[in-house]
Image (tube, rainbow, N blue to C red; front, side, top):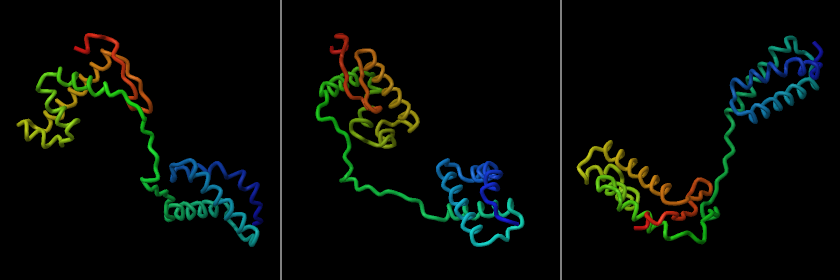
Length: 179
């Protein structure tokens, strides 16, 4: 059969794309594979015209192209951490730490101690549980509740400005929170 690829491609392209899309989940990769299939088909049709079952032949080429796609190594970019410039603000409000300390001190001792050991001193929660004679589950619950209470105090007492999900600036708006 004559290899009139452009008419055949126009007829089967959507079905072939669906076939590839079921096996490759990234749309950009599907586009790349479809392009590779078309290049293989055109290259073969320029050399030979002996394809009998065009549809089956196209699906076989698609299958082999998908196999090749999964066999080839992924392109990864390695970044030297020293070359990576992270955004760190030059100025930050040091009062936040003072207020944070006051807010933690204002919590009941059952909440303030695990929170301070975990988030300020950096101890693992398992060690905190052993130190306080609590179960790991109870320790995790107390730390979580303490974080929520501190967050609620921040929200109650002032305005928090965020930049890319990180606290950027905190302003006390109620004088009762400073005592």
